[in-house]
Image 1 (cartoon, rainbow, N blue to C red):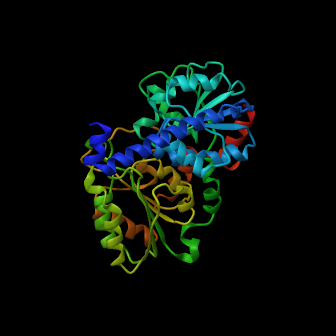
Image 2 (image 1 turned 90 degrees about the vertical axis):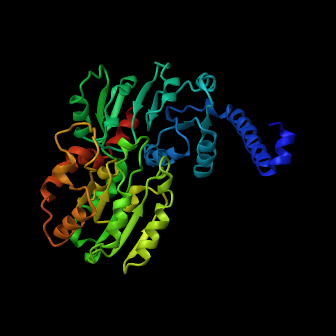
Length: 392
């Protein structure tokens, strides 16, 4: 379709495309304007190969790079994500690389960089790995038993910075060799405040109130990867035990990405909860989880890294495990059933919640053990992540 035909037949689309083109031109000029700035002696680089959905991954780490008082720069590969980060962190130097050529041009000037840090495994990470004079370190964006937490792609990195021994054991129990990959325990710095709060028994927090936090995952790329409990939770919230005072919900940012029927999940949950005599909040999908965990003392989770986040609060965690799925998990010495209350149906969840709320928190001892094994409690409290950043 020519520009003139598009203008006549679909003027909205014409002007939308024109705006996008203008934004791209502005961004290209912005890249050029940064060239003078990257001669600065930046020693650490954070690379994100994701689109705007990677904001929560970046947000997880930036505060601790800042606390380490090191010179770091951020490099992203998606122009919409670039604009979002510039709005979020206007005081930071943020670069956009559209392709490998841009990467090469930047690295002609980034001569002081000693290490690149990767919050997620994306294919375009490969564009930086040719620079073998610097360390390539995977820091991730959470900790879970999902199979994605220990697979062969990790061989491309020099180091894998993990929370605790559980992640190291997942690699030891994998069916293949990880060659020279080094595992460094650094804890979970974003959970330090939560670990401090967890010293008080969960039943005594918030003046005895029960604050429930529901953290969903999305439906996955394929149906066999669909671990989300959102349909079950609609039934649960219709019959939630009256001992619950507040319900907080944070849905996964990608909910409804594959299954369009889930796009209205938030509105449906709001409708259900308005009919109940309970206070509730549904938070922005990009809100930091640790801030929500600090205000909660009962958790309902799907299989994902949010289980580890919730574990820091040392309070009962209920985890949805679908019975009709062949779930492939990385293996450590403690599985979800050892320290969380597993459920597959709404009735099973409600029965276990009533039992725990009535005083039978029979996994409490195991939960304490899991906190050190999975989270690296000692490393978290002692700011090990910041220490390792400063040593580079």
